[in-house]
Length: 77
Image (tube, rainbow, N blue to C red; front, side, top):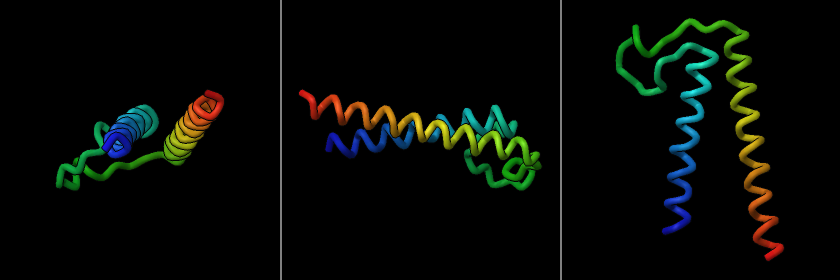
């Protein structure tokens, strides 16, 4: 049960982070589907897409480092 709650929190945190990245790099208001072509499709520059992908990669990398540090700390105790 604790693992499930932890995974759900991680998914929610990931979605928040992806929305931040999309807003900053792609000028996308939300990642929610709104069932409207005018609201669900965007024209994006290649540098915006590149920036969004780089930010997402770096966020995942930082998260993996933080998780590895937690595991190492738990092993030491």
